[in-house]
Length: 151
Image 1 (cartoon, helix red, strand yellow):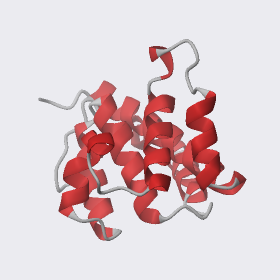
Image 2: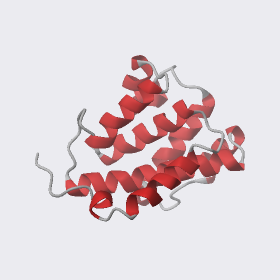
Image 3: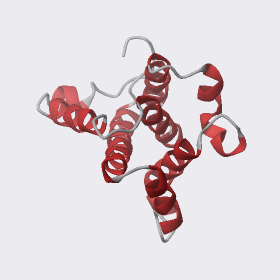
């Protein structure tokens, strides 16, 4: 694979601080860092963003995630490694990332389960993290950004 162009947020440098500010704000909502990293990783897996999957695993490890849990993120429903709160966050990440997969893109059942575990600030943090991840995924997949230690 060959990169089509430099990351657009670097080509238009005014964009990167704005995007990073949203990601930074999401980290201020009281959701554990590890949960935010799991959500980022799951959305990136769904979108096929190798750059973000690679970077997400690296960041999750820095946040204390075990390989066992990281290996299981794609199959989180079928493993015992995640808390109910993490499962609610992962379900929300999947629904928000796959908006066109169903008529009711984010069903009340998924939202209500997330709201059972997270207050309004936590929900805001999750939604912003998922949205920011999807933005980065779309930029990186479109321009074929290369995964690896150089990121």
